[in-house]
Length: 298
Ligand code: CP
Image (cartoon, rainbow, N blue to C red; front, side, top):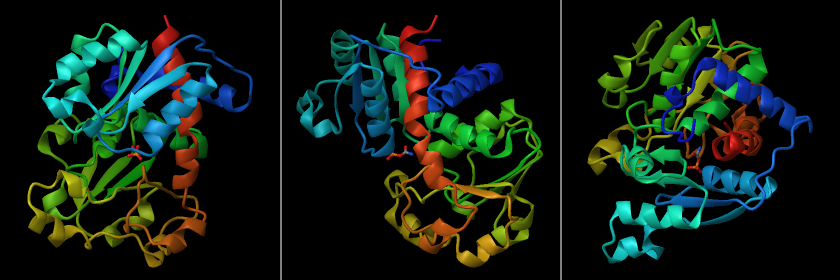
């Protein structure tokens, strides 16, 4: 494994190995190193968690970091194409962590670069390392992923984290998956076609909230709408409030890849089901393990 483009680049056993190493990393029993390596953070789109946790991971491993956080500072703004930009990045680094607004951009980069490429989010397509963190949080909470009931809530059409997570669950045999969204934001058919587990599309969360073990919430992705009017119509329609959470099972959890805008009431943060900040805290340890595997693994 050199490039990380899709969560389905990994087998279930490989993912569980990464989780085991992440456990050991958190316990101080596994201290991987990437001394003298350089990691390029190529963020053509904004990021807080992904960019900073990968940088934090690289620095903690002893690597050096270079990169950028927008296209404006690059010669792309003078008309240079993506392929030439990738060729330069691989000259200067041992691994390219890349986020881009175009679907398939990471795969395109991996075809050009001989150095490993990690997809840190490509358009509305995938965000595989976020999914590893999401599944790891479920695994830490329940000890297993099999047999659980998941609810995905919000923008299921444009959220790449949801796409990657739905794909990942094909490896883990969930009991049921509820896809809860307004009609215009339903999961795209090409994603539904790949699912091998029971799922149902639902409009009203109240129908299913009591059955759910893992409620995965996403923001409405304004930047992915081609039509601002469509965004305005749906932006207020899907929110998790305190009453919704009171209808959940006591041992159920709420995940969110963040950033959150207004889709989760702030008062929920202190409720026992809220695990999204814990989820975010796993980013650096898990990405440390993964970065080491990608750069040094055999
Ligand atoms: N979860 C996530 O990808 O967050 P950022 O956009 O802040 O990186």
